[in-house]
Amino acid sequence: MLANVSRGKLYGAPRGTQDILPQDQPYWTFVKEKAAEVCRRYGYQRIDTPIFEQTALFSRSVGEGTDIVDKQMYTFDDRGGDSMTLRPEGTAPVCRAYIEHGMHNLRQPVRLYYIAPIFRYERPQAGRYRQHWQFGAEAIGEAHPALDAEAIGLAWHFYASLGLRDLTLQLNSIGCRSCRSTYLEKLKDYYAAHARSLCPDCKARLSRNPLRLLDCKKPSCQEIVKVAPRITEHLCQECNRHFRAVKDYLEHMQIPFELNPYLVRGLDYYTRTVFEVQPRDIGGQSALGGGGRYDDLIEELGGKPTPAVGFGTGLERVILNLRKQGIEPPSPDSARVYVASVGEQARKEAMRLATALRQRGMSVTTSSGDISLKSQLKQANSLGATHTVIVGEDELRRGVVVVRAMAEGEQKEVPLDEAASQLSAEVQVGRGPA
Ligand code: AMP
Image 1 (cartoon, helix red, strand yellow):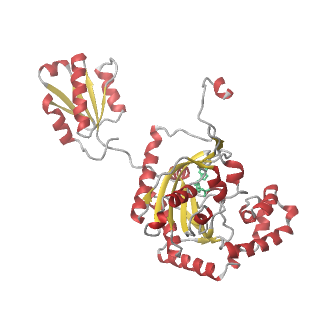
Image 2: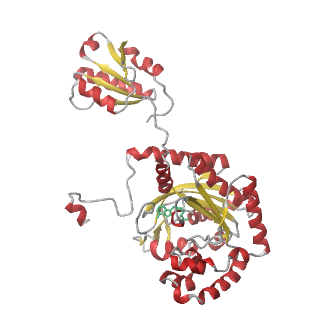
Image 3: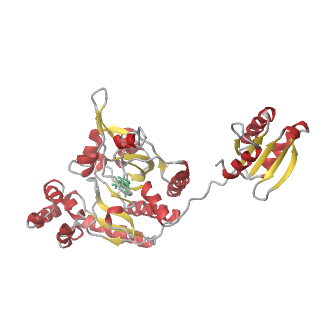
């Protein structure tokens, strides 16, 4: 804050947050529309949940001992003394809503998606913010491996529909409650022998959250990870069968994947399938998105035992990668009309005409302030107007206006009372206002 004051600004956006300015909006519209479209094709329906929830919802689901719960949640007591937390992830709130609204009575699985702001107190850097947006999809109420492949397919097709290239899909299974606990014992035994060489974070993980030991990116720990026991070699028969089927479906869907036995996720609720999508040129820190199966979560949150699978992707990172790959969002190229006027009487006519044009679906800007016709035409140009209507004093006396097609530079006189209908016939309406 003081730094801002010294630069002459009293306030800045909070660290790790950003304004999405008008020039960035086409990217956001593009990405959100593609998300909605891919969900329509896969039969997922939109759900919106509150921005904050009871803190226990997250500590219970994401898990004590995870970075999110231990270090990153925006938690506060409300005025009634209840502990609330700004949503640090999207799955637990959707599961809470599934239980609360008795969605187990609907035809299963229930397929839902959300596009929502997420809050995590992280160290800000490129692609890592304290408020970011996630698009997530969840299929709740079905244990079949075909649903895992569907969730992965949805994620993959979302990125493809945006034109993103050079992505890799990393796949792993982290087993179920029973085979994982046997595996974790083996993992802990192995790590105990290396305890002295571990980084401080991994020392803490060893007792609190051993699976996350596999996820450490520190070079010294990576050496230890390399020869650690692999979960995929300790899966029970059922988990093995499930994993084989997921891989088989993905092959049939022609979705390329790479097996990564060290892939675990930062949230505790995952079971069996986990996956991440990454840009090929960037290391493991920068997943575009990821997800997996979470068969125990709904029961954990007080619902009936209900299997589920889902994924989430950060929209800022998606947009960063679009920019990096030179992919531009389609421009909102609907007709823009500028109505120029000279004199007060003409301005009144211009306001009337502008209203009539807007009612016909056009995007219209009128001149503001007392500026010359020349300046108004300049303004029309810089706004990217396709047509400018000039309401002049002389023309007005003759009951006409001048309509100028900006690209061609051609202009003609049109009777004032026909201007709205003629213009709307001429410009392409219906692509929505810019
Ligand atoms: P997670 O909920 O941790 O599995 O994250 C899912 C996706 O959300 C990640 O792959 C990122 O694309 C995105 N994401 C997570 N944390 C952040 C963050 N702090 N800033 C921006 N994007 C994030």
